[in-house]
Image (cartoon, rainbow, N blue to C red; front, side, top):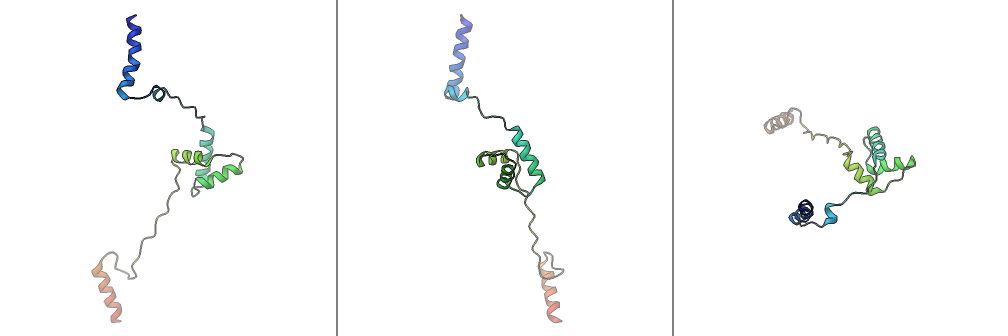
Length: 115
């Protein structure tokens, strides 16, 4: 009888520590498994690296797989399939030999003006 009393008091004690409602800590997700959709999304993203989640969604729709845009975006983020950004071209100065050296740029400019 003491064991059952101790077991019964453990749950309210644990709940009292966090101040949580029982529905919160007993929650079990009912979300269906998206393994097949995730693998298809990864496969398309690896083939089309420059496509974002919207264009990948259109490709999936073309294959007969309809996916809600919010769900598609959530899976896209969870799989870390962000579009790889292209590097920005480096700004070039108009003077050869200047390469980040202001004094070099001035001397090159003076040389050009002198003729």
